[in-house]
Image (cartoon, rainbow, N blue to C red; front, top):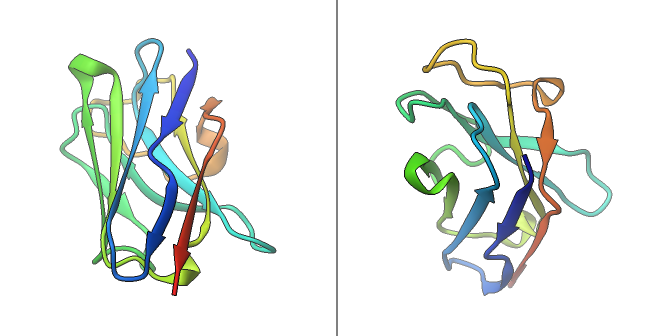
Length: 124
């Protein structure tokens, strides 16, 4: 399975952006991570295969939303009220192991496949 992320770009503070990640094959739990300049990679949101269960980092809980369309093998990250500190490379990742349809992987080492990253720059 390969992942292709897209949707990054330049956006003004307060604006919105939607990232997409298309998988070349079936994947189960999926997540979005980011790594900003001089920062460690962090998990922003994750979603179960069923789409019913989700996880969000506290830093984005009220602003970002993760969703998926299994008919298109695609996961999305809707980002609202963007701030300059959201500037980072955003990565999608997939867990290729099915534990249960509602399982949400929340640790980096649970993910088997990573996308190439898409840069989001938020200007002030």
